[in-house]
Image 1 (cartoon, one colour):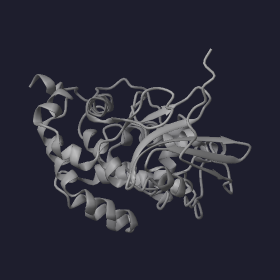
Image 2 (tube, rainbow, N blue to C red):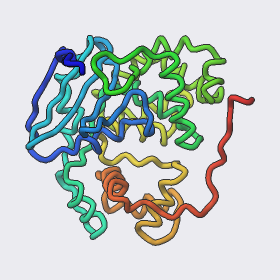
Image 3 (cartoon, rainbow, N blue to C red):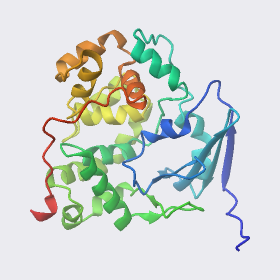
Length: 309
């Protein structure tokens, strides 16, 4: 039996938040499918993630016990990650003014008091997978993300519970040949958008300190980025009001939960209007509680294998 100990973290931080933090659910919004090579939930419940900070790659492990959250980090970006860990885990998530209003929302809040909205300050890292999810089923987008990272990414530093991969840097995304996107099942429209965004990565990253409205407008000024993609990014930037208008399932799910039948985007926004300022929070809470799980009996989005084209 091996008696070797895992490497000592390059940086660690213990944080005692003012209220509960559900680490797994809070960071879960950053995961891209159950087999994301940059995200792993260990058997002990700790969440492991690989990321790319301004100072370099990092792997971090987050766990909570007895009201304290502990973050251990490995790699060149460890100190930077440890410094921003509370922000990442929703320290700035402000619920003031949030009124559940109706039993289904109140029940979700009661059952998931530790669900916070994380603030992932690396906008580019959230934007690329959102682009991969444009106009395709999530399972296909997750597979493309997984193939590209495992083929072209670098191993995550530290003692990861399974092999993990650091998301690609902007220069790596820019340098991918067309056949790499094709093999991963990404059509030319999405790959062009991803490359364009990678070319403007420094400007994209600077949006992190702008208001949500300004960041949304700036993102939507980029070719290939619309309201849905922008909202997907803002949700991971901590915006409690971001709603993914244009999502294939969301309006139908919201309609089923609130009025017992699928609705369109316009009707969904009418339903959510009483929670303006926290509309995204309502959606996250209801998904966490299983309240947006409508029966899947209708037609589904057509899956297309772009690798065969």
